[in-house]
Length: 259
Image (cartoon, rainbow, N blue to C red; front, side):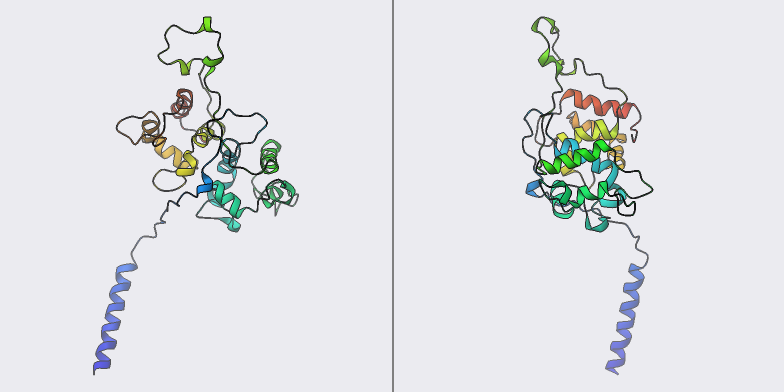
């Protein structure tokens, strides 16, 4: 009798558990991965060298625009390759620093077989310019470098031509128009280390959809202008250069286009 009772109780408990679970919505959970120490870039405040490829400024925008969404982000990880951060690129994309031709990351870009080439058909291959950026980055050691672009034209103006009103001299000569998300906005995020921190969680800046979401609800501008109503960004750091802020504001004013 006890055995029968135990069997009945087991069936009842299983039924209750199934009933409680079967209607749960299948909602994917986005987990913010801890930042790997090697994701911290070096040389961030040094002037940009025109002959140097910088990971955050030059390489990340290519991955963000052509590789990550739906293929090589943390969720899809096609072929085990994840391109969301420096540490993930180095650990999953078979990069051989100093030797592009031995690096799968480069080889798949120049592959003549369309079935092996990345991005895969029917997407077009990367431009020769973008492929050269990846090649040169690997050749230079595949380093996690960043730099501070010269966005303050006032510094190069003759003394006698400086305006008498210097309340916002950083914006002198800064009049961005026709802003591109891939070519203008993403590099700003990269230069300030935003993408390394915001590739998951409630604020996502390494994809167009994520950036547009926080742009449309006012959170992006509020954070970078250090509006007291928002958590200031970069967190614990100085406000972005006013010209960089203007680039983002102009992108929003022009319709937050995916271009």
